[in-house]
Amino acid sequence: MYKDAEKIINMIEAVSTDVRFSETDVDKLIADAKKYHYCRIVGPMCYIEKMSRELEGTGVGFSAPIATPSGVGETTESKIQGSKYIIEHSKITVDIDMVINLVYINSGRFDLAQQDIEAVRKAFPDHCLKVVIEAPMLDDEKLRGACLAVKNAGADYIKTSTGATGTTTVELVKKIRDIAGYDIGIKAAGGIRTLETVEAMIALGVDRFGMNYKTAHDFSEMLMNM
Image (cartoon, rainbow, N blue to C red; front, side, top):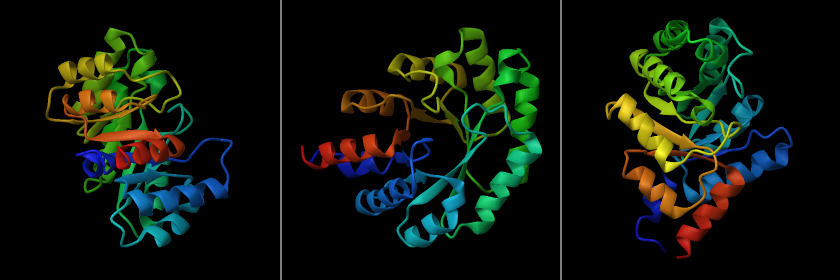
């Protein structure tokens, strides 16, 4: 076993939200969460009662995927209502994993993006709030504006990507850290598959990693068998 295997695996948020996935994938996600003790899982919100019931008492929590994948299909109020539904129907810890309003970011309206996040933060002050900025697709100006909007709104984490817009590299995480500083967390997601990458990101203060549940399974197995 790799010397830090359990520590690293406990930083993983395993995801099963692909449009091709079925209830079978949800069952596999739950089984792996029990086996490897991931920090969080991210699954279809319609299965929240099943997931929370089966994971109650394990220490594994749920990250509610709000406004995924594009961040433009929901209003502020619908983000709040979606989060409220998950919290009310879950028996396990719930984080809010919300995609930033990318239309605002692409328009340079970082103030409106910040206000949207602030409203969710105000509605759920006691829940961990992670905001996805889709960093791989942003130029330097938009990256800076998005990072500061998330930080200034009082979110707990900047999440780099849903994985839909490109790969999160170590260099990109360093850029985010240089902009946002060390008083906000970073959840890295999007094409992260190697131990070398994970360790380099941990050195930059990353302590959550989003991975497709199949990638998380293979990565965990690798660490456990080194």
